[in-house]
Length: 37
Image (cartoon, rainbow, N blue to C red):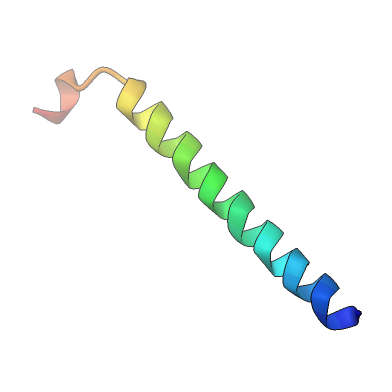
């Protein structure tokens, strides 16, 4: 039982990190790119 719970926890952490990364990419892509050129 404990093994399944820890596996679920690590999966949740992974999904959270992926979600934060996706949100950061969305935020960056929404910014104006004038200063990048």
